[in-house]
Length: 558
Image (cartoon, rainbow, N blue to C red):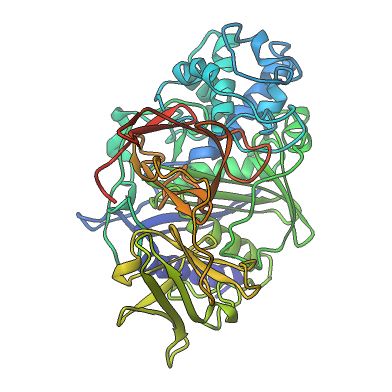
């Protein structure tokens, strides 16, 4: 058996292990070089109810990997003299407006996520509708001075593509890129006519609390979309052709499909920073990661690499192209877009194919005292707090004979599970609604646990809520499938927005910082443009809030 066959065997075993412990029904792994395909590995199920296996012909939404196609299209248009990346977006969209204290951002700022726009609005499904209603929001910093990932920025870029070509964006992407790349089975628009070709996308059946291993998955919300932040769906072999083009720096099958100048700008005109690496992998070997004009530019163990992830409702994908060592990987899954399994598999594949080992923590999610990434010894012990009624809540964290962490409270014991972020979950029935977070810098200097509004400390935390208003505390929901619900909680003297999951939802508890009465910055990052605005109150209770243009109403559940 060759070394490549051994790697393929290891990857197949790893992928199947993911399907047993993570919310990943199935997927496809393809590894390529400039000269051809090394292997294709379908795994798991495309349709859970029908027990239908994934095949090489199934379509998967590739989400934000579509952004590289937008970048390449605009670079082609720039070469043709139809756009200038350093001109303001209003030169091509004269109707566009956004609240800002800074100069209007350029196409280049939008391409490398340095325009200062919010991550996304999700309030409307249409490109031009989302672009128009940005006039109700504001930017957060001087264009070019910081990196802040923005899907709405790429929606604007799609509108620019359509405006300067006079064609629908989906036609432009097919003519200029999909067809030349030989991605004949792929589609630049997710629509009902192709739905029968898709692997069914899945998400946790209960979206209002942390998912636990073994809990049910359900088909994710299906919807049509042509917005340029994530409009493309591809098969595994087709996405691998895109990766081969990256390996060839614009050449594919002996032909130049993207000019050398365009490719150089795609990967050379960089943002101040890049996307964070998934916390689940501490040994990814990434020495540098900066965003280009639609793709991440990374140095991994000394190699020059290009990467991008794609998260959609019901789909999570990742590509990695090592230009130094001529190795490319595409991983497509029908897990919900906030699940990083595709990235973990791709980074493991890259390590193994380049002759390196990677320290993957146990895929089984039970929190283990031997896990160097997820566990800290100071997490163990007895912790106390008072609930809203003034009653004492006592919680104990300890390990069992197998080294697994358990949570005990009220005479009941539950298991503790790590997640793929810095949060934890438990099957203890009294702690089912929120994630648990461990705060190293807690008041006593030894660290403490947070659970929703509760601050669990070795010594009881000081009581009192200060000036925090309770009028907005509660559970809020919208019909957006991207970010369905969240809770606002008062923790000590601070307000927090806490989401249980979702493609566009934050993977951490975010503090709300009041900028003026009823208007909050979401998160402690001072330049973050995301805002939460309180709506009307009836008899002292806020009935709705607006998050970046998307309205959420108070719901009846706790």
